[in-house]
Image (cartoon, rainbow, N blue to C red; front, side, top):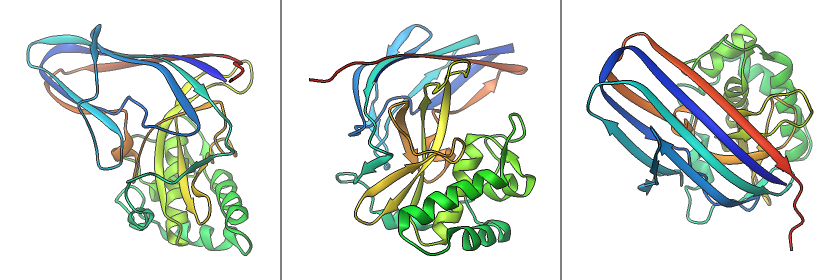
Length: 271
């Protein structure tokens, strides 16, 4: 499937900032499930290219504005040919060993409730069967309710609240899978609507390591494994490692943020 992405992020400061520094993870790493035909990132209309690769294999760049600024516009324009691999990302050539992704982080520390859910839901059977049951159990427990969590919400907090968004579903699943001995990592990207009437969105899901298959994606928010509707961008131990934008500023009181994502699709026959 050929997906065309337009992603605009606009910051407005009621009182101007005089320094803004941002680290961006807005470029996709290579993946067998997608072929990037075109990808452009702009900061206030000027193109920005990756300047390096972080420890997780994500292309990254940092930009700074050291003058008064009231408005900041980040834009992604892209075209990607995607393939349905039933969620199988496979092995990362030269990447971190899977065992690295067994250690909890502050955002993915398993609470007593998460541990109990993992032990009860996974049960016996083959790895894929157990992990699909686990992902569904996470979604059963954590209902999708927008504006009930933020970037600092931990897996345990979302689990206890029983509400959250895709970021929270991913981090609860990661915490539960690691407890069961499965390496797990957080993935950020995009989701093209699977049905008419649903909006396109930035999205997040988890990849769990399964012997014989490598990394396999699970999207508990939608109870599926990623298919051709998904564009994979960055990964890490949790949200903080894979966040599209992280930064700091001086000044810039009364910040408002507006995000628009538009994804159009067309079927393309590969040669």
